[in-house]
Length: 514
Image (cartoon, rainbow, N blue to C red; front, side):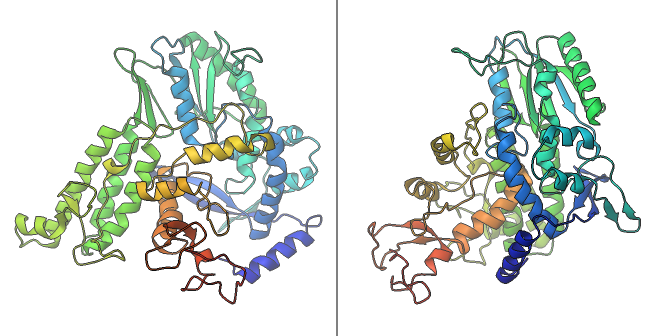
């Protein structure tokens, strides 16, 4: 990571080279593609100066296209995500009388690597940084052991601006599929009767059709529209299914209509299998470690997975996973203490460690005490409340100044997966630090279980339990302007205030904290 002075020098250098910077080739890196580690996904990692310039160009280009993008495009867009795509499908298919029951579940083959440059640049038009974007597209790649290779198509998956360019290249997909919306009247924004409805997240899309024939027609039209843009369907992952038979998987969820017309959106079987395998692998790797290592390793995984799937019908799944984790921890304890009885093991590692839950089978590290004087313990999936996600409205974008109040209210309604006590404090403070008035947590939420896991590790856990956020206003301390009550503040703001509640010499104008 760059130091503060290095960041300042980088910012000055970026400003000085706005017109003269020449993009450099990206570095080719391969990472595992999905659960099958034999398949690799090629990434193109730009140098840090290119990333800075790409972020600058994206900040100028994105608002223009946000005003034009189609309403049911949710991938790589500010204020939108996987939860909105799933909620959109639920809105389309939830009624028992819903007629769009034939589903085209499609995936584009290597979309980032095959985008046609001429079509993309034509779509961008007369944007001032068009030449810079062209140079990034033509910069080439450097791959260890193979050297330099030119790039005649595609945009590097790993570049800051690449996701936006993919959305620009795919703009118009809904119109090509035959989707039409009411432009005015009481049904404004709704899909016209008889038309298919298409939901897209990046290069994954679902077209909800009235008949199998219409689904086949939509697939043919889209294939014809994609071909000049250098894109094509991945036939292995593209299927046409009936909603009431096996349903379909999308973004880790299974969407299916059951007997009686009930639509349920649950964690997919494949996602469950991947999680169980990962938990088993982690527990085998932790053999020989202590209980605290088990708690520290598994808690972020559990929190991340539960946070992502809390918007679906996941209650039974969460309880089943709790039982799976219990079996893994009990087996780990038996392996750690092969000569001890089951009664000794249960007494050593299991108990009512969560004082808010009447559960005596919670796994904990009795030999450790945290900062609050409690035993660190393993949380449960089922402790995460099921919260229905509120879908973003129509074509709303955070870049629209007329919708500032809408997005402020929306961020308050979308609750992060935190404990109720902290959520009440966040709500009371409108999510702002009372000392600097900046948001306490980032606005955009993660888009996968792994991202939720990293979010908990790098943002929430450290922020609330350790460094960046602290509970300010404890008893025995001096009261602040809003009285003697607990508040959430940034730790960086808290450090600007002395222990006695007075401003420090480094920040003499800092407000007095409680």
